[in-house]
Image: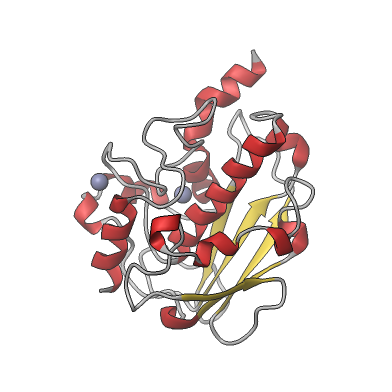
Length: 223
Ligand SMILES: [Zn+2]
Ligand SMILES: [Zn+2]
């Protein structure tokens, strides 16, 4: 019963993460998809975007950074964020990425709250290091992944499937770093919340890897 409950609720978890993090993502849900992104900049030069991933951001949920997540810098056709627009290029995804354009990715054990499980969340900050409004100019933004294996087992005991959900959640959080929001439509997109449609417990609108709708919205946002 409990597991069924989680499967039913999991499609909303990423919104919950942001909502819980004091940030009003809910208000963007009604935006038209042609403008499915937050206003403002993210504080980075997106042509040279790096992600420094702590191994503990996803161990023990899945394997270490060295063997995962370089897909985010793969070509769009292979599910990565590159090759969509020259204005956005991820140049480094590793445990030692550095430089001014480095997004830090950490892990936190985030048990479910009232039946809602957080896969991952973003935490944007202003120039004084205070939490920033989503539709504002950020100075910096971090990604926090849920690294509690017991939490993930509530929705998936299968290692291979859990890896796919986790990786896709990371791909989704990168989309938030790039200011994309959850689409308000039923077009399949990685920026919808939850388990990909192809997997058990999946939501029909959740794309595994990037979809045309994600690409379109990124181009509208960044040119
Ligand atoms: Zn989200
Ligand atoms: Zn849409």
